[in-house]
Structures are given as structure tokens and as C-alpha cells.
Amino acid sequence: MFEKLAAQAPDSLLALIGAFRDDPRPEKIDLGVGVYRDAEGRTPVFAAVKAAERRLLETQDSKAYLGPEGNRAFARAVAPVVLGPLAGDERILGVQTPGGTGALRLAAELIAAADRKARVWLGTPSWPNHAPLMKAAGLAIKTYRHLDPATQSICFDEMIAALESAAPGDVVLLHGCCHNPTGADLSPAQWDQVAELLAARKLVPLLDLAYQGLGNGLEEDAAGLRQVLDKVDEALIAYSCDKNFGLYRERVGMLFVRGRSGAEARIAFSNVLTLARTNWSMPPDHGAAAVALILEDDALRADWRRELDAMRARIASVRAELAAADPAFAALGRQKGMFSMLPLSKETIDRLRKEQAIYMAGSGRISVCGLTPGNLPRFVEMVRAALAAEGRP
Ligand SMILES: Cc1ncc(COP(=O)(O)O)c(C=O)c1O
Image 1 (spheres, rainbow, N blue to C red):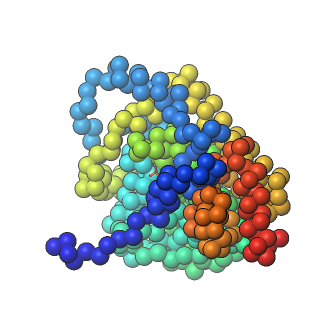
Image 2: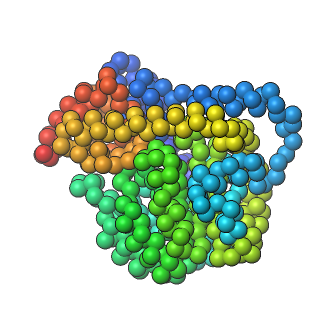
Image 3: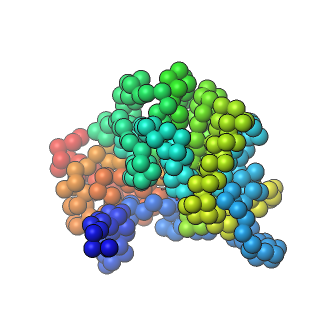
């Protein structure tokens, strides 16, 4: 049987991580990494998470199954963080998922179950797993340009034209904040225009919020998503706690389904539970239980907010330093979150890795948290030289 399978290429980012690990040069810089790093290059466990885990260890009296909806205390606690005043609306129901990836996969399967002909519109470039996740559920993808890497500006007119050509019932995948890989987020006015268009054309938004708190602030980063929910009847939200609680490998996420009425939302939700049952039966509990404890406890919640604020401040300060260092990086100062894209050719990216031990994804995506006070000046100098060699100012 297995002889019928074709070999699949390994994930290129994982290959880059391996090459970085094996590189003996002490000056090497890792900008491929997809997790937050502090100024010492560490990805620490939040103190609030450690405290919640200790409490769990002492107080948890059973590991019995929970059910396909996962940890209900987690879902109750996360809903107001994401939805704000819309939490508690009977038209919005949420289920715990294994990470934001699990939420996206479940969303894709729900869309396919509801309307196999629905197409998913995706701005490019996007998180490389978006299109494969949607295709894995049998959905067709339509694309438009999100960002022009050369000018670093959002191709908003192209986005609007694409949505105007979409058919009612089509799905539009939108990054809630901290766009991955470009860092280029919609402005409040652009969110408003998109929300109006989605509502007018009866398009269904699939809002992916994986970095809440790492852009402008916890509330601010959910503002666009809430603007959309205010306007549309139906929506899906894929949420991840893996970055903003530093829980990556624990796989903590949620899928919210917004229906036209409470009754429709409950029907959709029953389908979500059935789909979850055939995928993972029930999601892993540990990370979600820790998040629930943190959000329900005033002191732990305050600790978590402090740590999250410090992460956001570090990302913003690296961006500000880059923007101040050279006009070539001006756009990076305006962009948000962990990632941005440099308009470098594949050859230059390879050369920076081989000759300077500067590691970045083949797409030109850099994880700004890979920069520290110690390595930022050399990075700026080398990229400036590379841009000049490519004939760019
Ligand atoms: C835009 C986006 N959505 C979703 C995810 C998935 O997050 P998780 O690790 O929780 O599955 C990621 C992870 O990198 C992401 O960048």
C-alpha cells in the first residue's frame, strides 16, 4: 500500500531550524524561528503559567475524559478576552481545540460540511499552513494580494476588488492582528470597509486571531474582529493561546461559531462537536486548564498581562530600532507582531545564510524577536549591504 505514496518535501522552516542548530559560527542569527524570544534569545515559560501549573498539580483530582467541547472553564474565561462585550451572545458558541491550527481545521471541515462549493479567499502571502488546511477539507482557494513586498504596503484596492467578485456564501480568511508573515495589519477604517463589504455581499469571515496582545494591546488587537462581528450575521473565529500565553507545545486554541440566531448557532455547534469527535475526540486539557486558572485569578491574570505587555514592548522596541537604523526598514517600524518580510531575492537570502550566518525563511520572512541588542547592528549592516548589492536604495 505505502508504495503508492509520493514522498513529501520536509517543511522548509524545520530544515532551516536544523541548519541553524548545526551551524558552529558563534555570530549566527536566527530569524526563522516562529516563537517569541526575549533579549537573551530565550522562549521562557510565563511565571503565571508556572504558578497555574503548580496549582493544577496540587488540586487536580482527576484526568477523566472531558468531552469534545474540551475544558468549559477555559471556554468561559477566554470568550470575553476575544469577544469583549459580545461574549455571552447566544449566537456565538465556542469549543476548545488543539491550538489555532485545530480551530482552523475544524472551521474548514464545518464550512465543507455546510457548503462544499464555498470558496475560501486568502490574501497572499499568508501563513503557509492556511491554504493546505483549507484544501485538506476539500475547499477551493481563491487568492488576492495582501501586501506588495517591494513597497511594503497593503494592496487594499486589490483586496476590495477580490471581495467584490466573491460569491455570496464564500469565506474570507482574515488575520485578526499581527499578520503572519507580513506584519501589515488593516487600519480601523479599512476593517470598517471590509466589514461593510462582507455584510453587503453575504460573505462569511473566518477570523484567525493567533497573536492577540502582541500588536497594539489585548483589546486593540481584537478591535478589527469585533468590528466585523458587529456587521455580519455569520462568522468563524479561530483563536490561539499558544503565543500570548507562551504555551505553544501544549496546543491551546478555540473555535467560535457565530450563527444568524441562537438556534442556528446551536446547530452549527453540534456539527462542530461531531467533527471534533472524528478528529481528536477531545482536545488536550493541560494548557487550557492553566489558561482558565490564570484568567479566573486576579493576581495570576495581572502577572500574565505584565508578561504579555513586556513581550509586546520588546517587539515594538526592536521594530523601532530597525526603523531608526535605516530608511530601508521604515515599514517594519509601522508593522506589528513577530513577523515582517524583507524584499530580498532568494539568492541574497541564501548568501546571507552562507556568508554571514543570518538565517531567514526563503520567503524573506523574518522573526523580529530573533534580533537582540547584541546582533541587531550587524544584521542592519549586512542587510543594508545586500539591498545595495541588489541595486535598491
Ligand atoms: C496566523 C496563524 N494562525 C494560526 C496559527 C496556529 O497556531 P497554533 O500554534 O496555536 O496552532 C499560527 C501559528 O504560527 C499563525 O501564525
